[in-house]
Image 1 (cartoon, one colour):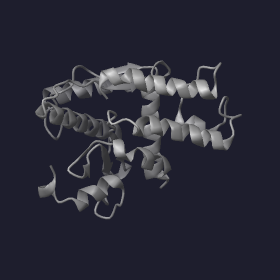
Image 2 (image 1 turned 90 degrees about the horizontal axis):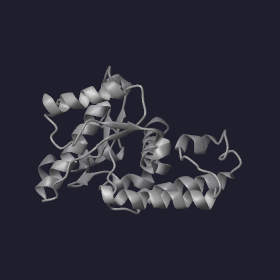
Image 3 (image 1 turned 45 degrees about the vertical axis):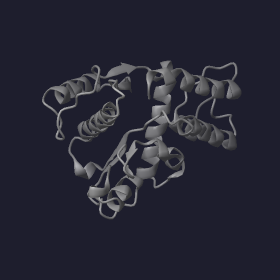
Image 4 (image 1 turned 90 degrees about the vertical axis):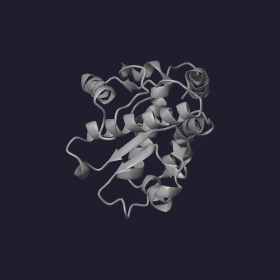
Length: 223
C-alpha cells in the first residue's frame, strides 16, 4: 500500500481495539484469536471473536489501496519452500510496481517482515534478486533490502498475519471463510489473480482462486 495510507489503516485497527479493550493494548494475531487460549481472547465470547476477525478483514477489503500478495507452497514441489515462496513474492511485487510505472505512477517498494531468524537469509536473497535475478529475471523496483521489526509496533504486520492465516486455512484446512472476505484485494490483472500464488503439482485440477483464474483466462487474453 502507498505510504500515505498507512495512517488510516492504523487508525482503523486502533479504533477496533478501543471498542474491544479500551484500557488494554492488544496485538491482533489471528491464530491467537481463534485458539483463545490466553487473555484477552480467552474471556471474549466466540461470537465476538468471530466479529473481530471479520472486522479486521473489512479494514483490508474496504480499501482499494491495499494490494495483497501471498504464496501457498506444497512441500512436495520444492526442497526449499522458504526460498521459493520469497522468490515468488518478490517477483509478483516487482511486477506490480512495474505495471504502476508503466501507468505513470513511479514509485519504489519496501518489504517489511516480522522479526525472524531468517533475516540474513532473506536480505541476501533479495540482494541476489536485484543483482543476478530470480528464475523470472531481475527485480528493479525495490528501494532497499527487506526490513524487520516487531509486529507489536505496526498494525500492518498484524494485518499481514491475518492474510497469512487466511491463506493457510484455505490451503491446509479447506476453510475459505477468511480468504473469501479479502480475495478481492489480491493483485489482479486481466482477470487473473497474480497476487495469490499456489505452487502445486496438481494445478490442472485445483479449484483455488489462483489456479482457477489462470485456467479460465487464456494467456492471449490477459492484459
